[in-house]
Image (cartoon, rainbow, N blue to C red; front, side, top):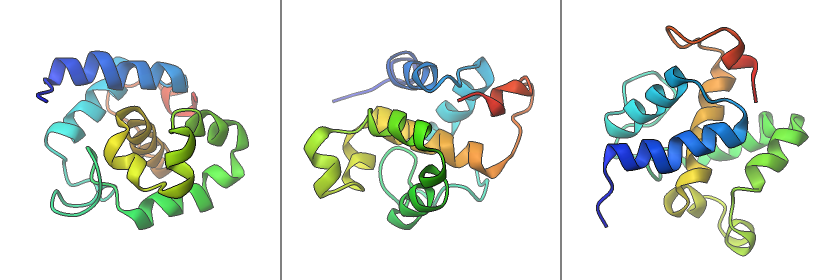
Length: 129
């Protein structure tokens, strides 16, 4: 299967950010850039490490759930709604490899949790979601 940048942006990243209540053009562009050519932001793993489109490690994934989403039950529920019913329970890290919307949401939350502000993004974009 061949996925273009436009398809990824229009069919995965934008709808996921809208579902999360975090869509802005800057957030969309940021995640597309990370997916295409992950910049070294200290958030995501090197391209030869990690899982899925955003190269998120199992440790980063667990840390986000244990130290961030565990204290944000509404957001945790929203993210869990993107995951597969049974697959998530048996192999949550597998969702990073097979579920583009789920891994996009996790990538966005990793960025959001970092507290870094996207250049050109309205200040409320970080607080939304």
